[in-house]
Amino acid sequence: MKYINLTLSSFEEIIKQNTVYVDKTNYLYEIISKPDKYYFLSRPRRFGKSLTVSTLKAIFEGKRELFNGLYISKTDWQWEKYPIIQFDFNGIPSSSNEILIKSIDEKINEIAKKNNIKLSTKETTKKFKELILKLNKRHKKGVVILVDEYDKPIINHLGTGEERLKIGIKNREFLKEFYDNLKEANVSEAIKLVFITGVSKFSKVSIFSALNNLIELDIHPEFSAMLGYTQEELEKNFQEHLEDFSKKQNQSIEKTIEEFKYWYDGFRFTEKEIRVYNPFSIGRALSYGKIDNYWFDSGTPTFLINLIKEKKYYIPELKRLKINKEKLRAYEIEKIEIEPLLYQTGYLTIKEVEEEIYILTYPNYEVERSFEINLIDGITERKIETVKINEVKKALIKGEYKEFFEIIKQLFKQIPSTIIPKKTAEREQYYHTIFYLIMNLMSDNKLKVRSEILGSDSRVDMLIEVNNKIYIIEFKCGQSAARAVKQIKEKKYAEQFRDSKKEIKLVGINFDTRIKNIKEWKIEKDKK
Image 1: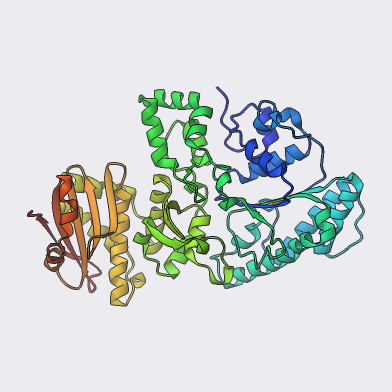
Image 2 (image 1 turned 90 degrees about the vertical axis):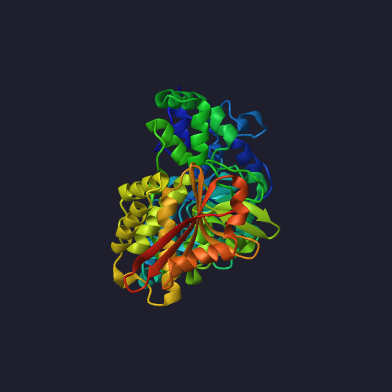
């Protein structure tokens, strides 16, 4: 059984150490065998962008022996050696604009020295152009330019204050000037391929304005599964590991695959209905023999939480967010919008496509649960104890409603009164959001929580479905629980759920703005 790589992003090391490699060279051959030169690929972190760049590097270094048995080895690719310029912004310091420029300058000098090239230009951006032209002249071949995580010098400065944002903007302006070199005709003639990766996609007007012929692979339907694992790839490449995992868990392989799908599948990046697994979490779950939260814990999205708080974003909308597809393609850091950022960083993904509208949702349970834990901690400025969430869940399942609401009230008491909104409308939304997040953290494939469900002429605040019961919940602020239940009846919220043959409970909850907590609750059985 081959070893599963957990840390390597070098294609050569992965192959030489006989670890599992999911063959994606069919996509790379499709790129390099075409006359097009400029490509861009954005995907969330930990999705294999660096490995893709490393694989391309090995191809253009002519290392045919590494590709035995892979798709590209059976093609007409000639395996010639090309001069390569590689910038990996994972390892290029960018804490200030001066440091970024100096670091890139040093990298250019290092590549020039390695190729016995003397550069006469002093200015870094012009030096880049000189390096391309002289490499082309010396090797008499087009230059391959590989840029990994191009946006690191920018996104590292988001959500960290006004001064850091200014650094991000200065870095962006420098990088724009830097990439402008690639548009000049004589430079373009000296280039074989430009391949750029990143997490976020900033407006091409501001950073890739010169590359108006840039092919965006991230939205190209034929490259939907270029990164990540399809269901077929998972079962084909990890068959032995899945069997071993199933034995350790004393369950069928079908049950294991069902659990993996629920936890780690669901990322969809184009209009083509192809979904992929997150490779980072798959590798760790199979290696550690345990389903758990891996991808999310590999990086805390502090700036995302800060933006959601700052913009007072209504959290329940994230489960089914409608957005014009053009809005997802790029954004400017001076006026960041949360939706494209959540999509590009992998916290939301495409669920459905309705003409020009994308419907977004969380890709899977791992992302949803973990993101909402961070959201509730950020919004309440308190760490919510997982044990309390489990106690809430147990009380609801057992129908111990007094205990259920007492625990929730304890959680509300932990929230500092200074962070609760002063405006009544905002306060009602705040309470609703906290309650929603607590309920959603209880959810799994047996307990379902939904919010803002549309009826014929109404909108249900929340619905919880567990075992043989459906709870229809209406929130009020500064009114009464009885009034909330009355609204459920008057608006006939229960009608659309009666075919389920489950027992329906009508739940009214009233928040008191003075005590900043739940004041009263009322539960009635639905009378059909």
